Amino acid sequence: MLMPNRESKKEERRKKREAFFNDAEIWWDKLDNTAHIFPVIAGENMSNVYRISVILKEDIIPEKLQEALSMVLPKFKGFNVRLRQGLFWYYFEKNGKPAPTVREESYYPCRLIVPHKNRSYLFRVSYYKKKINLEVFHVLSDGMGSLAFLKELTYQYLRLVHPTLRDNHGDTLSSETSMNREDSFLSNFKKKAAKPYVSNRAFLIKGPRLTKNEVGILHGYMQVEQLKTLSRSLGVTINELLVAVFTYSIYQEHLEEVKNNKAIRIAVPVNLRGFFDSITTKNFFAVVSSEFHAARDNYTFEAVLEIVKASLRNQITPDNLMKIVSYNVSNEKNLLIQVLPLEIKKLAMYYIFRKASLANTSTISNLGNVVFKEEYAPYIDKCNAIIALSKGQNLKGIVCSYNGVLSYTFSSILVKPAIQRRFFRKFVELGVDVAVESNGVYDE
Image (cartoon, rainbow, N blue to C red; front, side):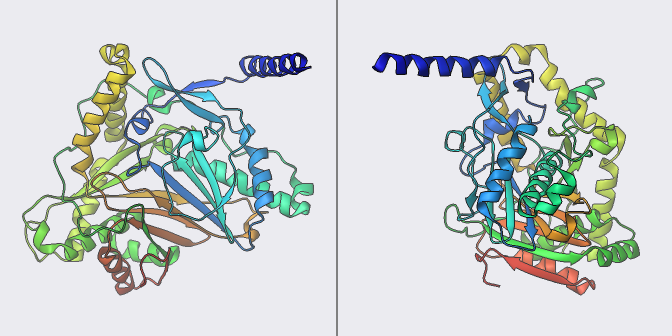
């Protein structure tokens, strides 16, 4: 009696394998140029995971969110993958398992994603009260690609909860949602360029740390119109203003340490899609760094602002961004590097990362303005994001805007939120209203 059962299971497995390999869609994919580093350096203390959250105006129904995820995931081939290790490079392979389980948020954000505990997926979805969280391992995509996935997940969830939306709009993806998975680094490579990065050590923010695995989160909400008015009056962009206030806050808080010492260098990832006419959902960004070297102890905020402004504008140009892309891609295209076994590549990449990781004091990432389709907007209150910490950077910031409100979120493993406090107080001093939320680690 057991033989037929064994044979039927064997036949079922054979059919699954056959269906997998005969899938009309491409079931494997290369990592983009930037993504190669993330599996090498990821660990418990540096997860390379970021979170984007949508806060609705109603409590989340977990079963509906799980159903929405199960419906949307198969449509996103870039998220329906698992990471595999080849002889020469990591690569993606179609996953095909049921969607990862949606869970209520119960721990600190941006923890390491362990694939074998997550049905081999490289992202997770959680919820808390009215909030939907998407956490993504950076190897999959940058914020732009992940935002597209989160928007469609939110739309599908709302259609399930509000049947009228489903009746009116169906369950298809939005026409503006890109499924493009090209490696825009490779497609825009021109010729080898000299190293465009500064790699000497920057000033690092240190101090007593929170307990292991604890992360302090502070969200600051500001009106975009107030920031626009202030920025125009100062002759800068909002992003330049944010970087300058952060730089000035570090300078003020660590005045004696930074004077005539290492530079305060803030890494600023730049979305390259607008510069190179790309719609890829893979990673496509370059990192520039604003630099402020405190030669004395009496810099005004206006002086720091001008230095930061000039530093960023000198680097965020099509020519310089092309140099960064070309330098990064030329290393991948090097024939000697290509034929090295992955295990040797991993050692080399980790060595290069360790050397470069201390070149920046902190990071400010900006996801830009998030726009939801008009029919879904009445159900959405706000958005925010969180970025994981990395080696040498014990305090980071990430920005996004929605419906006229800019969210600036600090993540930190330091006990004292002194720099964060200076940052938000400076904006109040400059005439901008700030509302602050915490995850409870900081009681102020």
